[in-house]
Length: 381
Image 1: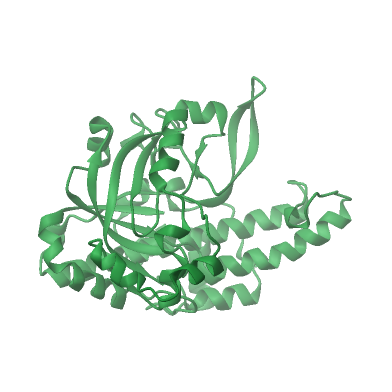
Image 2: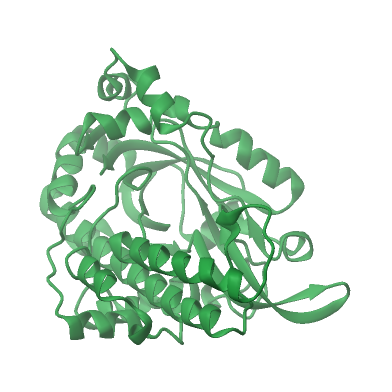
């Protein structure tokens, strides 16, 4: 997840929202099998897998100061391209700088409500401000890494005599060769994803300045934060009263570190980590901030989204005979999608109401509400 803030206000953008959505759809490839503007050689991709968002910045896609507002500085050390399959390399060569399909998106939003003005000021957010939220990851590259290593883990379960209640929980001891290879491959996929979002941010900046005929300074499009929503990381946590090293796998969760945590950039060290929680394309998304309670109770983690209440098949069935795009237009949201099927699968009714989910984690103290963002323009794969 990546959140960008701008100098623009909602009333300035609404008259041109259709143009903006169209130019973003045209400039940023999206959907299944989409191919980006970049064509990576194998050596380019190898360097990208090692350097993450830094690779993109070095290529001119953004500024060095962007890196301090990305989880882990936009790169995980220890990635090893030698453990990546040829098929994963091939899938990654053409998809850098693209949005995925399904629940991946690029949204033009505005800040509808501020709950914590001090923290919002630290994040650079104000009421009525236009923001952009990007949800995409390591694309076909990461998918292939997962596919490859599921087979490795299934063999490891038998090799190490691990008994599982469900075969989908396939795993290996963390210090085994299989697990170490996986961690090195996963870090490469995380680095691919950080570079991907960095490139997309750069093209957003170019597309919007061109469409609105304003300067980059007038636009003021800056990174608030970028945080992973599916990653395993080695961290220090207190377990049974003792600090120890553990592997925290956040799948269906996101990091929510508190004020003062040493892994936070200096700019947010005093207030805590920005936590980005997307909703569905028809309702809202939220910015929260990490808390000490999360460190005590959930290994520094909180929710990562609304969660589905309808399967994709059920959603398509529910949408039969309806125009989801027209319904969204009537709700004041301009949408552009590669196909009607995606809009049906991702309609609001397919998800829990994100406001209810966020209220739970806020009351539980696992992260605290800072701002509510409402969509006005959506690009889907």
